[in-house]
Length: 234
Ligand SMILES: Nc1ncnc2c1ncn2[C@@H]1O[C@H](COP(=O)(O)OP(=O)(O)O)[C@@H](O)[C@H]1O
Ligand SMILES: [Mg+2]
Image 1 (cartoon, rainbow, N blue to C red):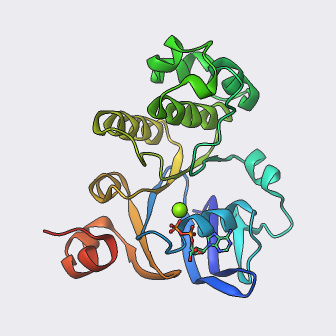
Image 2 (cartoon, helix red, strand yellow):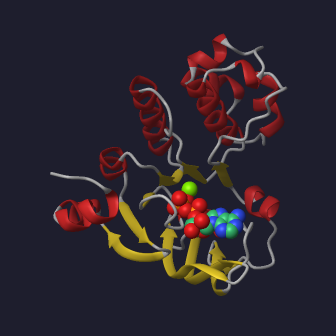
């Protein structure tokens, strides 16, 4: 099966500072891939490269098996790639409803009604402005907005960062619902246990290079890597 999005031998840099080295990652339809690693290891940079926000230094990004070099970020979005960026990026001065409608790309299964049924809290806040929402509600809105585009692939960058445990659980529950609805997911998160239980495959980055790529099970059987590169003991 052709991957929706794939990086092949991808290297990327900021100026002369090479921060991604020969990365191989592919997300196939319906699949959940976890991208892990400590702060500053290149996870967000890899997402930016996949989205077309940062051109490859070498190697390539393929969208549906075709080199995406000529595709602008909005064209990749139109092809069904939705992002929940680090820091959420919702419109602070627009209401919940306006944020959702602004993103809408009709014709798929995800309507405003369906998104609101997944996030009853957003339904309660429908006329509130983005900047009047709690952190958890803002994150739900960012995910809801991504769903409104009826994506084939949703990319989540640190979606549970800074949220209270109960809200985190709610976000993880929603991500599983999105997965169950058949949307492929690339998830970056520091909550190692949650990523490992959700993902079909995981990639661990250290200083922009892959140190593990494979099933979550293989990583669980490797406590040294878990400890050194993910900060997990046990
Ligand atoms: N806009 C930028 N300009 C220059 N260097 C950057 C920029 N963004 C990130 N970096 C550097 O690239 C490396 C990877 O960062 P990043 O991809 O944000 O890591 P992560 O998302 O894994 O925390 C870090 O060394 C970081 O300092
Ligand atoms: Mg990051």
